[in-house]
Image 1 (spheres, rainbow, N blue to C red):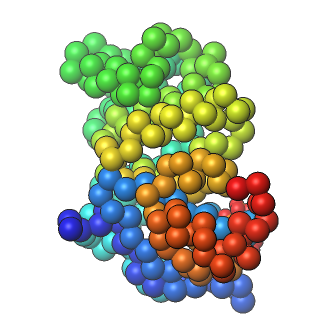
Image 2 (cartoon, rainbow, N blue to C red; image 1 turned 90 degrees about the horizontal axis):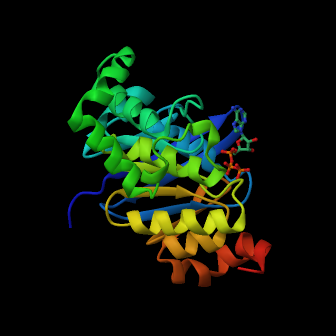
Length: 251
Ligand SMILES: Nc1ncnc2c1ncn2[C@@H]1O[C@H](COP(=O)(O)OP(=O)(O)OP(=O)(O)O)[C@@H](O)[C@H]1O
């Protein structure tokens, strides 16, 4: 099997006396959707920050595409192909959807931010931006101002802005947060359509979404990995049921 896209090797992180990440090891394979779940305060956000490069672990290693990136910051990891979507939004409301995607494409290509307008006249780049909008079902809205998009459409736009940068791993931070039922359903379908194209680490509270999308699930409890496995194994795991899923009998 080919090398995993992301490998976390015994990460530890404490805030004072509180051990928020305790010996966490996991990997995300090529094309896999790997969900990270756990009760409130389990340490998911802290772990994602260590993956993205916003927080340094006290010990342990983060390997991305076979390279030790533990000491690299957010921008350097992003340049290597680590895309973070949803909690950090760079959408500009007064730009059209297409302009927003073009800006993201130019920014990732290393050109200066000021070059985006000519970039729209660059046919190859425009085609790339349109293709990213097509992939998220937003091509018909490409001339709409981002500020006029519905919440779910904006989520799709944020995804397109990441996809245009050809990420090797997408970190999805609670994509369903704030979406209504219909919107959430459309977003889940959209994420399902991306399955296999790019590796995804999904942090999500909505268990229906997690169980529909994930190939594997890692459950974090008190900062430590309680179990990693296929959805059916995780669903039936007694520790998980007691510590976590039992909270949501409706699952
Ligand atoms: N900067 C910080 N300083 C001190 N404690 C922190 C800091 N950041 C997080 N914590 C604590 O670490 C623990 C884990 O928090 P974290 O936000 O990572 O959990 P989470 O699983 O993402 O929770 P939620 O599902 O509620 O978002 C919590 O007890 C939190 O209070």
